[in-house]
Amino acid sequence: MTPRVSGAPAPDLRASDADRERVAEVLRDALAEGRLDMGEFEERLEATYRARTYRELEPITRDLPAAGVVAPPVSLVKEPVVSGSWRDRVVGGEGSSSWAVAVMSGFQRKGRWTVPRRFNCFAFWGGGEIDLREANFADREVEINCVAIMGGMNVIVPPGVEVVVRGIGIMGGFDHREEGAPGDPGAPRVIVTGFAFWGGVGVERKLTRAERQRLREERRREKLDRKAARKELNVSRHGGPKGLEGLLDAREALEEHLDLLREHREERRERHEERREMNRERRETYRERREARREERDRGRYRDY
Image (cartoon, rainbow, N blue to C red; front, side, top):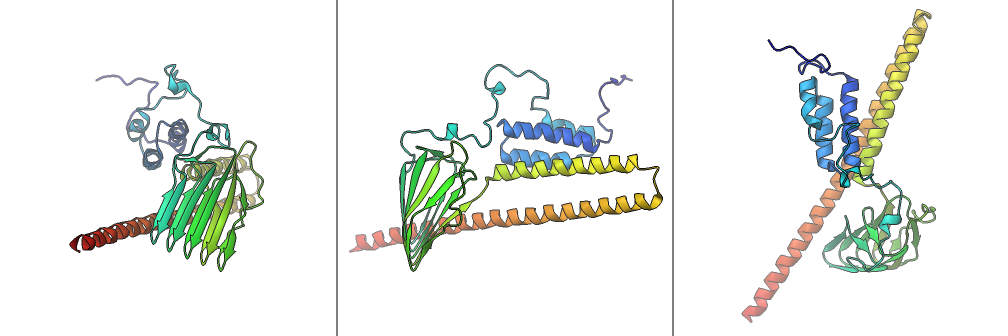
């Protein structure tokens, strides 16, 4: 019989909450450093909190560097970009896209793209979405010029960006709710201009999905810390009156229940928002395909003549 090494736990032993939290911390570091994308991170994090033994925890971080391990001296030692730093996102040069048109259809500009100094967009019986949350900027001040005729557009900016709205609406309007908030040091300034007739241009400030996930994980850690602190308080007062111990236990249970309700409410809101974005993308894709089929059908009719 082969003796077991005393320093390594048996793979069939039950894992504790602290063990699962250590694995989750490794996954968060890997997400911040770009070793995992959001889909892999969510999948592995779910497997971590579902794991019951060391055997189930071991494969989750097998291909990730452990804490204290020296990485090769190439890109693996590079620190992640500090959240809130705008220096690397103002890249200069020309934009990757300078205009967009939607006639009885829709358009989107989102993800990793470079916003030019002036972006022109037009919508007639259609809609468009200009998402700047993950975009780079050609200058410290960019202009989004929107013309909406019986249509609508939506400009999404990340937190920290200053927004100025100068559009004109006739039987329509421009959203001014995000105007007036001061920008972060070094952050770009977004000026929304244009004209809306029987239409509207909305401006909203939203976090990226990765940032929402990071904040959710921070709240989860804070909840675990509060729970551990309450347990220590109960232990320190163990010699006190029995009625006080019962009161502390009831208060702890109530706070945990309220935390769970808040988490579930927030998760439902985020899922609803994601479904709404997916449905909007599907509608726009369907509208574009329908318009392409209609154009192809019209071209066929003209060829017959």
